[in-house]
Length: 432
Image (cartoon, rainbow, N blue to C red; front, side, top):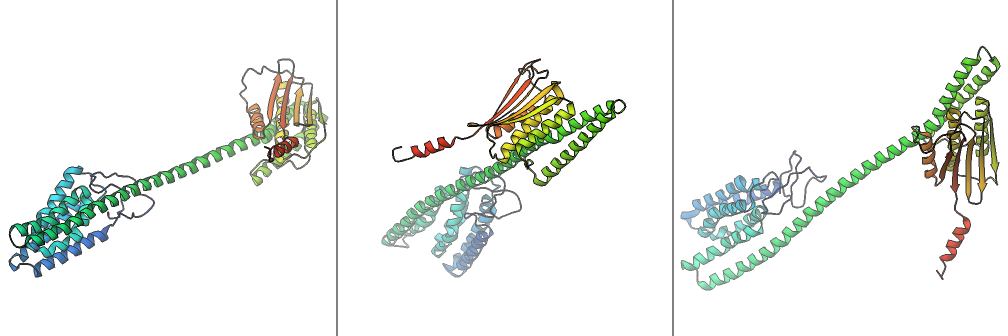
């Protein structure tokens, strides 16, 4: 019932409620109850036809008067009723409705009394009343327009009372139907408006959920990338810095050891470069291409050469095929634990043990270094990264250390027992 305009407004209110709510424009361009400019044009054409009908029908002495009254109805609509259909209107409901009711009655009632043929104008006036003042005021207004001309004609003796009675009976039935039908239509409009608002809220909630999901995904990816950088490139750069410091002190006193450390620096830089390229290309954790046992032995041997200490790598049990996620978790945990040996332990030896057992796989990295008090919080990211990786694969990370007694890091990743699955299948049988 409103003209679609450029402003960002949308209002839904029951006819005659006197309340309009300003809100953002919805995603749809119009509503089923939004008749727009076509209704204004229809009403105008109907009233112009009534003016023409008034000029050619009815008592000749009243023709210009009735035409003027029909023109007044048209003026009342555009001056007083049409703004009420605007979503910007916020007039008091009862006062607005009663005022419009009287404004329509003042010209329309004398017109239909002077020229009963103009009763056909209710085809346009009635919808305008229902849309502007609601059924509470529209039905009484129509009752006056439908019943008063017949009663007045009977009282003035222009019609016999039998005709008046039949007319009142027919018009009363019309009024009863109008009262029932208008109430039903208004309830439909109320429910449609409520459903529209719920749909808008749902759409807004879905957009917000999608935005939060994207933010959560981006945050998860940043955290994953941060762990990868810390566990690979950052450790490699730390190793290179340590080797550089060693080379600076060895160039004059021990050239052979300095060259060995330079070779380690070149090897570490080359592996870091390969890790970086792989992460950029795959946008995910680097795949452990070779076997996990060999990768653990290689990083242990490199740390031993770098620090000049004994680092042993041992595999127990029957090796089995592990998923890439598990291999990456075990390898990164070993790398971080050995990096801590390099940075903090001051150890004389370290050992890496990978054990395949009946209940899962376990990784242990132990050193005989300085150790530390585990009750004190650490400012680094290494331990947090190891715990996050363990939780991601359903594993458990334990840290055992005391000052002066070394440090032991244990990562245990359990696996489902096939016998448990078989028992579950058995329990699903008919006797379950």
